Image (cartoon, rainbow, N blue to C red; front, side, top):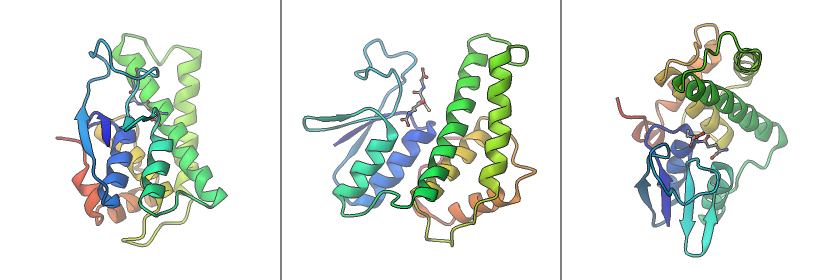
Length: 186
Ligand SMILES: N[C@@H](CCC(=O)N[C@@H](CS)C(=O)NCC(=O)O)C(=O)O
């Protein structure tokens, strides 16, 4: 199967982690979604996945598909799933602001982008209050939070100085071979 995406995307990173852990046959097809004229996905976003006739256009069904195809489960617990969704909300807001700023918008004066900034701070606080996984026992909610927080540091989009549990989570994830192997290029 083929995973299309970039090596900097946190959503792609989570898919790569699941694929690396799966033992399945897969390859990564590098794609710059911003310059590709016909990227092959209606979302105009990465990641997307092709496995024969199956096409998946979002990281959540991709991770679920990969986990289940390799005999594993995808987040059975509702509270864990909520944490996973909070991490997606954090990422969606932070990436949105990143791209808007890059396209020339002053994100500090627009009412909606200020709301997005407030959303990021509130979600970080909420995620910081969650219990930490043990080293070597990260589930998909933990991976989603970890790739999200790591992306925020990589792109300098938000600080976790006031969030000791999120700092600790990155340390715990730093013991995980697939998390380390998928780090964005320096
Ligand atoms: N809900 C999607 C979000 C994917 C997403 O936002 N990807 C970013 C890269 S990290 C992207 O392709 N952005 C391009 C754009 O918004 O134009 C998922 O989970 O796969």
